[in-house]
Image 1 (cartoon, rainbow, N blue to C red):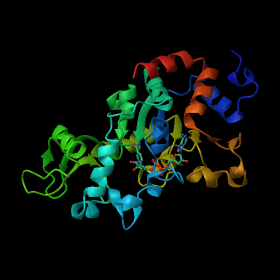
Image 2: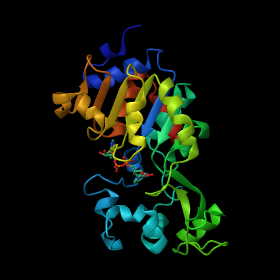
Image 3: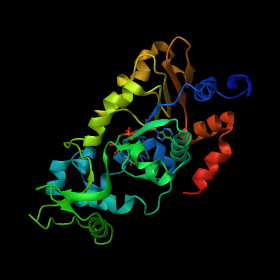
Image 4: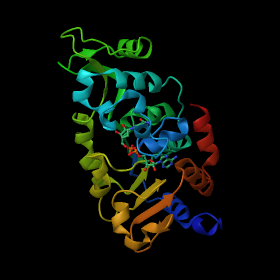
Length: 295
Ligand code: CNA
């Protein structure tokens, strides 16, 4: 068959190269790494996009520093800023999966997804239909909750009701400490499942697809360094981030690049737009839309 890159003329070369890789039959163990940017089109703000990101819009909480809203020590003394925020952004209340989430579900459906490492806590990947065993929620989730003092489990539904309806932090039934949903705050360790799988998954990966993340938060931002040296790395993001920057030296000023000399492919822009173009090239658009409409 003709390589896909020869079919459509005005599609960015980087996207054509991704389509070539995906249609090559060589990518059966794709690791996808996502961040808050993939949920921006679901109207959930990310952290760091200037103007719209959460860190630029926390003035009303009078925080000593923006990250305090997700800081364990701060929460134990003053849970109100997080409670306010969580009551507005509680997953499943008013947000639906984006095209990018549905694309990850489509990769799973086609048997090409090894794992989706998401830094997001919005659960939109699972809602989109990515099987739960394929998703590692690196920074936790809102389904369960526990005490920030004695770690006792607290009913997740009750925690949701108290935060969303009563707009206060639930009190632990064992020790009276403040309870919070089991999302990973600064100062907390990542879920065991992450540590159990990340080494073997990165070793097995035959393609790494990174989308919607600034790669500023560790240890997840090390994943692109952990894949094998011959594993192609693709970045679909509004900006160039992490070591995608360093590896490609002077070329980094370009909005889109694909160098034969490197294994990295970068395309700058809205990830949903990039995914749509990619799926059009692959002939996957109808399946993608059907999956997205079913969520
Ligand atoms: P971040 O640091 O805010 O970076 C987001 C990145 O996405 C930036 O590089 C943006 O340029 C890029 N971006 C924004 N919109 C788009 C778009 N439409 N298409 C392509 N790229 C886009 O967020 P990270 O995820 O890197 O930071 C990690 C934090 C953010 C994790 O701990 C998360 O828990 C936390 N977070 C999660 C959510 C969520 O669950 N939806 C929301 C806000 C923050």
